[in-house]
Length: 379
Image (cartoon, rainbow, N blue to C red; front, side, top):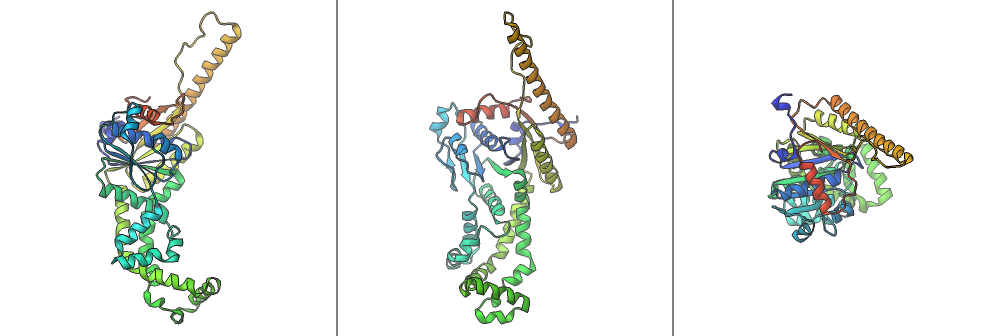
């Protein structure tokens, strides 16, 4: 293995990256891993924020706060100290609110306050702002960009949805940019087309039939709301498109890294393989794998202690055999996966996390898990 291909640890990764995007299928401990990574990073001196799209109450409780919302919320130092954590830098948590982020973009790119208010108060905008193609995924990436650019965090950790949905995140900036740059979209937003009922005469026959159908179903009020909204946003396209391109650049930036969380089971590993291939296709900065819940062999003698009854000795030996078999199977799964991925040539994190004998549900548990994540060696 050459020096370039030498695997690195999370500690080394923090020295190189400002944004870590944690991906993976459901049920592999991705959210818990994201929180543990962020907590431990703050404990060693990195001002950190963990962003989540799925505001699970369990995550908020684990972090010692009542709930996570769209505002950055610092984890109380008093709660950290109770858990035995002495952070050298503050830790924050935040939920990604896509609707609010969209509204903020409208305010940012509207030419004046009155125009922005007209859009925000438009009934159709209020109903459709979360339904425009790609908006939810894109707005989450937009908030990530805003946090990275406008805040002074040393580290931003993003907990994404399960992997197939996280691919929507990767494509969202391109989709938004393409949609806003589409000539058909720009034609559709021509103000001259939406002046009043008489403006339907300007449309060709097929488009006119569509609008007349809308008129019958929803009434002319619907067309008026549509007209007002489209005319209002037409002047914002250039700003939106420029921002989408900047978000896309963030995903490819050298300060960004993608961490793939997986478990040594067939379905999660297939998901991980699929996601890894997509990362490679998109030339995104991949930073490594974290394998969670890997079975180990509990400490204890391989042979039964003396003095046990014959039946107990047999059960003991069966239990030892079971744990050794499970551990061997996990080891083989990971080794085969590593061989298929051919990533040993990359300088990446390759961390194997043991199956814990307890659930992680509080700051103390997250801190313990973080310590294992940042420890040297595979476990």
